[in-house]
Image (cartoon, rainbow, N blue to C red; front, side):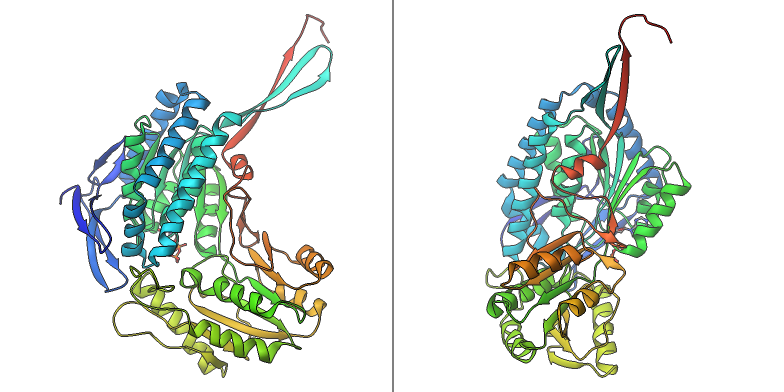
Length: 491
Ligand code: ADP
């Protein structure tokens, strides 16, 4: 099978790389395997890509090690900065291509895909800005000693990303790792390998030395497992399910105790008080769950509404969500496209059937949309037993609460702690409740707004460490303390 293919989309026709990207070249996998990626809108294969397995991971790790100890070591922080900024510019130049790939491979709407690519470019540029501003401290220990710290790169970083934001997760991972001077082997999600490979082409064009960033298409149990248990990978960063996150942590512990950061699942509460601006709260509740078809780890999948406005809220939320436009994700007016895969579609429909069988009220949706593509109607349940499981689809449960104490109690009653929302016009309520919620991000009178400048990550089983902002650099540096003895006084 060849190493590239011409792909036609309604927006652009472009050349898609298909190989594994190692040492700045696209190559076939050692075992010669390939796998197809499916268009979730029409359920047909788009193209087959080369599959990386354990041996390819090993080759890529060797390439990343050689670069780390060699050519990359001599690249100065300001040169790293220029390379990242150049890469960001190439993302912007090819924004239409990258966005079209996301729509084709993932099913997200074109408007959101364009915003993902722009955010990815901005994130890479932001870390380009950091590359020459990472430094340690001098510490005044005593007059005979010069003590200082160096914030050094960790080494070879394995990165495993999910399918819900393929190009955005690519940028969240690669930006800080490269800014801090590491080298990378990134495994994309098997459902959405295409944008990661197109972006790999831009790495070579930007002028990164060979081996600094390597991109492998492949499956979790083979390529992903090989990366997380590799003895020469110094750090692993993972975004995905809590279930797999535990496996990654175990693999790290069993192998070389590589450093681990995890960004995992959620079951986030979006709390609406009686005194909230109801139109604003409904609009953010809608965006909080139905944005990206519910396929966000931080989705506000539980809306808790105070009893005084509950009935009004449910009636108006139904009306609002019913207006979300489902359909061809290449249409500018589409808000919701298909779920990413047959497997995800089936999982979500199972949760919906389970809710119905348990006697929950379906206030809206609850069915497949159309008969081709993995489309699911926006679904609102009321009177449902609170489920602990992350559905990862366009399904929301609305629940009633009495007072602030009960809202906090219900809000915190899951094993997750990724995000939460609070809607109120009372500043004191907003601050008290946001302080009491056990979540890594709290949105007040909005939801799902994420900035590459501010940290993102989870409490409890939602993760370890923080991505984005200056905080992410801590994941990719290790601190060395140096004590330099002045003079010749002996102890
Ligand atoms: P989802 O269930 O939404 O597909 P996963 O957590 O299974 O989410 O997948 C997220 C990423 O983790 C993907 O790149 C996938 O290939 C990878 N992955 C899955 N299983 C493993 C594993 N056992 N070891 C390492 N990576 C894995």
